[in-house]
Image 1 (tube, rainbow, N blue to C red):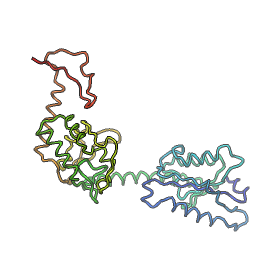
Image 2: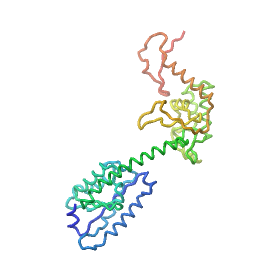
Image 3: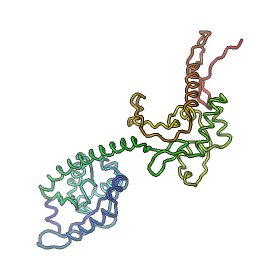
Image 4: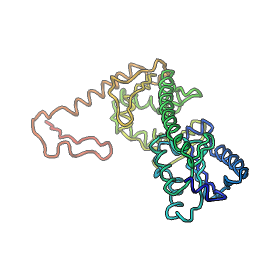
Length: 351
């Protein structure tokens, strides 16, 4: 790459910009990055020693922007960088640009392996690389060595960010700040704590009353709510704006699933309790590992009613798993299910 810089009088510079949602919070927005690169390019444009060639902007076609893309992604997982590769492949003798400029090394990658993969690709096509904030120029041996050093630092910084983020979430949960979408019956206040959403809370109370007092089945409750057009939890989550007074309708917005009702009847959030550490990245942790937040939000269901619902659920579960008293194993046992509630059909003997 060094010979490339000595042979050319003007080096054409492409810009690579990358931002993730976290970076936007940290003020690494795309306009800011581009402004810094344009400023650096102007400072490189003057020929002072008569040897180092001036650098010029390669053009808008060679501004590559990956928005909302993590720095841990490989080069083939970044749409803009894939386009950069396509612009270079097959153009060794007629390259559209000579240098790729970035605002900061971690705009290219936050993993050393990915960073070196990018630099190796650029080197294969004799493309130089300049970092605006770290004074790195890969046309020099020193610049190449600095990439490895700063790449390691970027990777360490990523791990620190993950640790801070994870620790921050734990502290937030301890304070009762709810992570994710508020459960049906609640909304989140300005501090992200749960507060009762009256319209939905009334539906939650109706569900418990029908199950505990009226002895209705899950499917009967689901049919009642669907027929009377109570907005379902799924629709509620999609249209969270309704909490601010706006309301949208959608096909099946009023369809209630019996499985969802069963989950609600067991959810201790309606007692004012908030458990966290319930899930790993891909699996649900055992209840023994759940952590109860010391913060309490307002309950929708009283403990007595909730406990009655719990006992009914346990009894029904025991009934479903109880072997047939006749001792006869029917051919289709456990295979036929109701299309509506997904429950198993069972043979009943009448006398």
